[in-house]
Image (cartoon, rainbow, N blue to C red; front, side, top):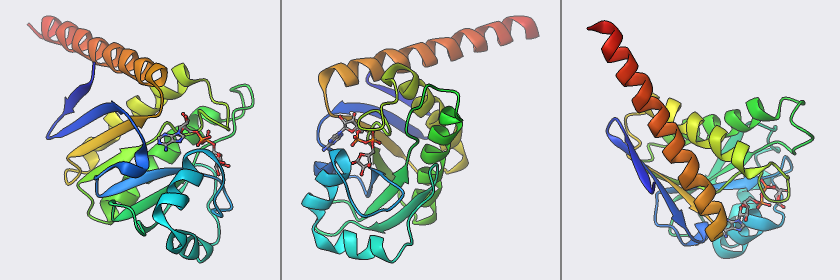
Amino acid sequence: MQEARIGSAVIQLVQGDITQQDTEAIVNAANRSLRGGGGVDGAIHRAGGPQILEECKKLGGCETGDAKTTSGGRLKAKYVIHAVGPIYRGGHHGEAELLASAYRRALEEAAAHHVTSIAFPSISTGAYGYPIEEASRIALKTLMDNIPRFPGIKLVRFVLFTRSDLEVYQAQLEKIVTGQQEKNQRGNKSSV
Ligand code: AR6
């Protein structure tokens, strides 16, 4: 499944490079220092230029599970929302809640900046080691549950770097949507 509708918004899955997206905001998988790094963080700072780091330096870091916003520098996106996911340490250190929080806070930042379209990478599933099956379930579920809080957000796009990551997200989206349809059908039957 490539996309799903949630009220007046669309959640979309594509393979690509997040630095090339033309959404109004892109999300960075940052670390608590907000001083740049490897992976998608490095790619965003390289493509967006030094202005993003200059703005980051004024933000005083960012807690795990939180998100902070800078301009997009030379990127097409007007804003970069720097979200800090958890380092995976076996799954019993509050990682799921922290990952959900990072996605929720990024959406809240987007809404606070009146953004109508936003692109996310797969937070924590690279250097931070979060198993992608579980991380994709949390990412999609959290966004689908929270998008209705922000009617101004019309497009939420996941940009997966590899074909296999895209396939994991596609299968997970299918599972969530099918699960919801079955739940709705059961609800309809019991109310007849
Ligand atoms: N576009 C989209 N996705 C990408 C791109 C790109 N240009 N480049 C990599 N990915 P990671 P994390 C994917 O490691 O796990 C950094 O050093 C990548 O394949 O970037 O949250 C930070 O400074 C993977 O699926 O982020 C932190 O210290 C996903 O993005 C730390 O890594 C996330 O991988 C954060 O680790």
